[in-house]
Length: 177
Image (tube, rainbow, N blue to C red; front, side, top):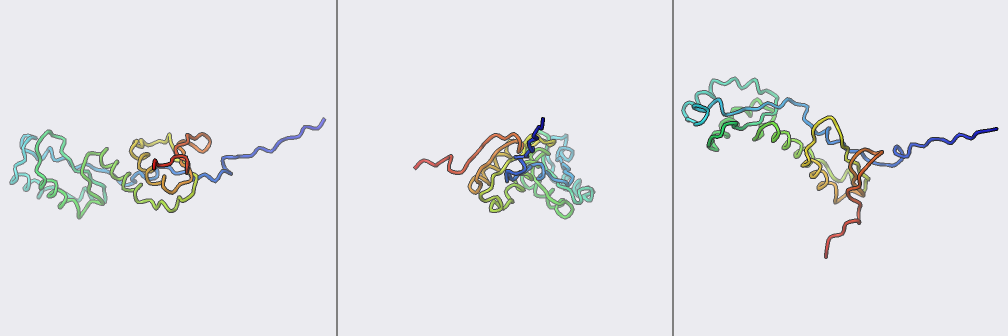
């Protein structure tokens, strides 16, 4: 008796899907936070003369080539010029200065990097936005990538190439006239 073996075909690898992993947009640079709280009198009040003196004695070189988030963890009223002054000291050293704590900085970086994508590279492509990775991708990033790619993509799916959730298919959603 002759048993015929069927060839196993990997349909996923033949499907011409473009997989986009949002984890690849995570910064490889160190993120460091500059908190204004320790520079405040009693961690509540900004005294201009003391604040300026403290900034003059700060070793800004520790921020060299880092992405720096600037914020104040104290519940204090901070004048706008204070953030401007800190930025003027940081900018010669830091790779980038962003307003906010670590979560806000990460959000800004991911948003900027997603918006820098040339959507033309994905024209008429079937795109899978990879899910379930090692890094915590915020919902905002999935929203941003969808906004960017929807006008050009043939389809957008979420998940893994072997198991996707359809999100968009060209001409499946028509604007109301």
